[in-house]
Amino acid sequence: MKSSVLTRYRVMAYITAVMLLVLCTCMIFKYGFDMGEDVTFAVSQAHGVLYIIYLVFAFDLGSKARWPFGKLLWVLLSGTIPFAAFFVERKVVAETLPLIGGARSEPVKA
Image (cartoon, rainbow, N blue to C red):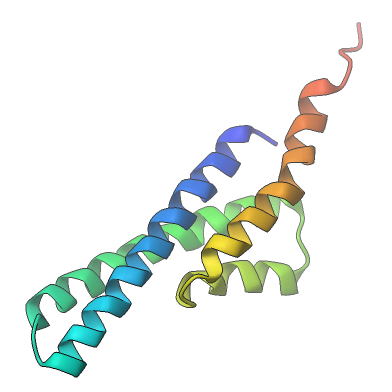
């Protein structure tokens, strides 16, 4: 597996997680203080588009790493739970790096 697959996932995991936290903050201002409705709409739309990109990259990584369905589902849903994507991303990287490192360190047969 190429390291670019993991890198794409990591970038989108962080972006999605940060955007979700920004969206939660906007929702607090919108419903708690009755302000920022336009900003909340823009942030929610941006998060939705970025989450779709995250789903594509996470599914790509999961299919190449041959994850079981339950693990893939948890990784896909982590972009909808505040702070979860940070922890899941760290665990995914720790489990996936040996797959990338193993591919590089294999001897070349002549």
